[in-house]
Length: 464
Image (cartoon, rainbow, N blue to C red):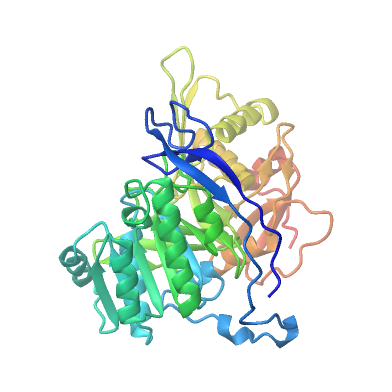
């Protein structure tokens, strides 16, 4: 058997007792976890190249590979399947991250029960709660199934033993930072422990064809806690977001080897559990019998998904030397820019008015397409003239007062028409809009002055 040339090099090694970080010279502070006085000498490390081994599974032409082994299978949760690209893939490793209390465990317990009802054998390993606590929550959200197995473990070897005993098709690990291996130094949640636990679980998933979902903690900045290697080891990285005071929860894919990363899943977290929202726009729009000044409906995109949201504004006479500009759910800088554009380009006197701009239902709008609806809502509040309830507007407003194009105009108009809106205001395009459904009239505007004239005076005819 042929061997590669091998050479070894011996150097003194120092290792952090907290996280396992190694270095060739002693330092007082760990370069990984920044702990003081934890770096100790561990002896001599020999580096050697590995010999060539006999191949058990020779490489094949890619056309002869059986792709059915990586086919999607539904999880029973439609919004999760949408984000993953079609469903669960055998042997896939999925990392789900989110802030504490956002509902990660509730979502995964619901996913486990729905997958078990589809016929999959599911193993739920919890390291943060007892089995009785998980069972109590499962009964509350109606997530009890015969094929759902539950165990409370924190030791990696015992977790691997549970996997060998049950041989599940879907494994849920809640969470990866709570498990530890006796073979690795450092406390649970440290860099070396997280790396070992993740590598061992993923290796077991690949060899067994077992789909694995691991919960990961996040840092104060919102990124996945632990070594960056953790995100490289897994196949899919998902982020679960939501305001604690809102029922809406949004699932995004930050990395997906099996599908696109521009899809989002919407969930409704309530006292009875968590539900998929196939039509989440109802949470973001309020319907009143009589139109109210200061409100305007817009269509925003979350990934590729159009969502109808309501922008509400309130103007009041300020008492201080500088007017107050308060925003909620919108980018504060863009909201202040819209106010400045209305003053300079539309000659609206807002210099002595306090402005309050917010969205309904806790939705956060980050894209510039909400500028036009924000401007129309402010004008409606100033003039005390309500906009029609069946009217939507979207478009980016520039500093020169122009209304710029936004992506997926036809998709936004189609979503508005589906929800019963009759009028839409959109940016002007060089070519006529295509694939516009019947039953909705579209006004295309080039600047903010034209938009205000159409919205409040109705002097021009729609382009369609």
